[in-house]
Length: 295
Image: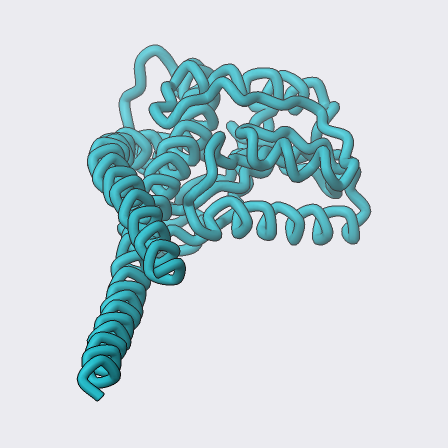
């Protein structure tokens, strides 16, 4: 019954693995719901910021604010790559790294020097493996990112952009469309593009300058709102990546649990057949022995 004992051991091992993956699926589902709530909560503020900046924007004002400066060419840019600190999330991190590599290739072919800033252990491990020098690296951002985390990531980059050391800042992240759709994406957060001119804006409002009574002044309002707009863009990228990670982990763990169930069915059938064959053999030996004694 050596084969039977081996099969029983494998069945026990797969059962234990299925318990772990099912538990991880449940934990990821709970975390995903909270992360999805943070994504939904961040969107109204971002929309309001975009509406105000769009209403205040004018070419004359744009010349006074460095964050609105549109460089003629991008000689040096920063690429912020957001990944997770943990694995077991299917192809989630691999897709983000693939997107980051594509952006690096595109920017470097355009003649730009790219400073890579990596958030997350998975991205850090990859770029260390390929020998890419990193400008900064962080692994302390949890799956519950805060506005402070976003400010810590982007404030230094904003200062470099204002000082003319950078000509652009890009963020590679996981765009949370739904639980089943979290594709990798790259957004340019600096220079700030007037929201009314972005793709998808209402063409009727594009270029329309509304008549407002402003206090204190449009310049003072934009001075405060533009940095907030950039920080919010990075914060949204953080929370959407966190939600995408949990969604990917939930899907991966559900698939692993389902696959473990299929393997268990095969192993149990094999074990039952082996046991039945052994019992049949033992009965035949008993019958044969009894016949020999009678003869």
